[in-house]
Image (cartoon, rainbow, N blue to C red):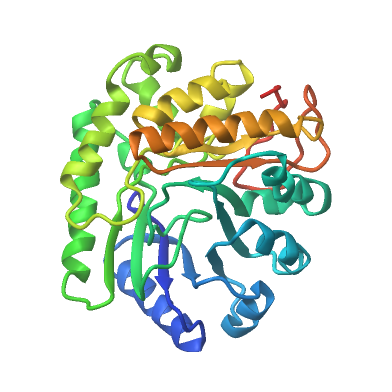
Length: 337
């Protein structure tokens, strides 16, 4: 099955068992149409994450509390440590960034490194994306996000793949168009793993090396299509470049072909930021500040949603291999940022 829904996310200001029922009903409706549904998610405005888990009472549903102020995040980190399935982000769009803004990241690295996967810094974020940790509540309803790279299997051209993706969007739109809670489809390209799920693998199948592809208009063509042909856009609608979730992109990282500069370059014209990018436990906070300031400036200059999500296993220093013990993250030798 190549039609994969990565996320059905139900947004509610009243997280309870009714929200669980609704999320499950939506997933069943999509599955009945022949899609595979990877995750069901619920996003609610910030509250005690442990209490949110208690209200939902279903460990198979991923949870998010959206945007959390810096001090709120720091004050509530011990609770986040207990609520391992809850994602959150901190919005730095208008902040004067200094090392205090890196505290959350480095506290997570020291005390609960697996939760770095659940946390990001965001800039000019757009609400109602079904992808965590960028998901932010704006109003009640649900949004859908796909893993459309798998549809590239057997495709010999970019256009052939994009037409398949468009068809998948259209089917979901027709399924839910009359549903009063339908917020829309986040048409972001969200790759995962290797082979047909990897965007880098598809680029190679088109006849490019990753190095070559970076200085073509290939990725611009992709994002132009995402914005023009989505029948009901919501959320981010951009190209995700998750360094360690796309396993073949992780290989390029290890070769030195996906530096932070190249990541930001691709994100500026086509992507959504720095995503699941490895950080050594001995990386300096000031270097993180520099990256955050740069991404903030580029996001504001171009009025473009960008985010930064660094991940750590809590053990690997620069030059050492990670051991995430996370099926969604490929282990790599960490490079200096």
